Length: 84
Image (cartoon, rainbow, N blue to C red; front, side):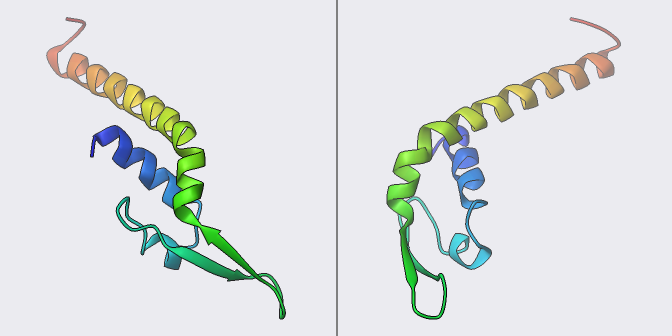
């Protein structure tokens, strides 16, 4: 799995409650039930949700990687005393 996809998946997992996110991997995506009220339960297929939202989270990962690259370049420039 690429760094890009790992970052995207980590961001995706934050949209779920901690107990559900802890059980999620790209190889194993649980179908979870969340209680809506005393009589209703909602079933959530996290695999389907990832398939639908994957591209959006990959764009967020791209933005994060781009910014990390810029931060690294700035830090390198400061250490070397100026632009290269």
